Picture 1 (cartoon, rainbow, N blue to C red):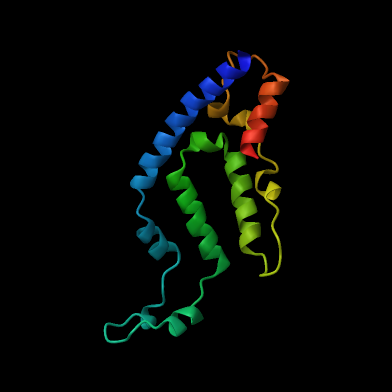
Picture 2: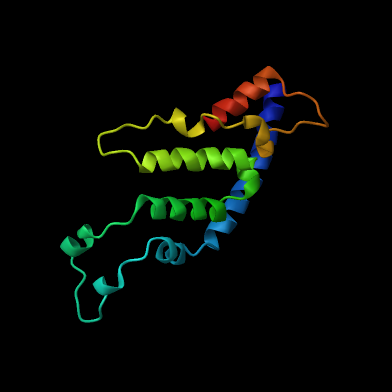
Length: 147
């Protein structure tokens, strides 16, 4: 019975969070963000030149610009309540930056993304009533969902 209540509560909070994310995603102008953070060089775009694939492959964007683009999208597409705290958001951004700086053959474990994230800060995953501590099983179930 307790388990059923936990999942019902999570479903209600999760659906509300998903609706908010869908609304924010629909209002996000991805092309504007891309053009702002990762612009193509102006000399490569001329009305009379054909943008050939071989020419586009030679263009590259610095990792810092790509990281800024992704960070801006994460801020825009996900409400701050999704992350729970600035620390959790910064941890995800830090992991994303590490991932972007990897070389081609290097691996990035999935757990590295969520390591350092405090699940207790993510209020929509659980509902603590007035300072009551989260039970061990509730904490474990929330941790499983995050990881």
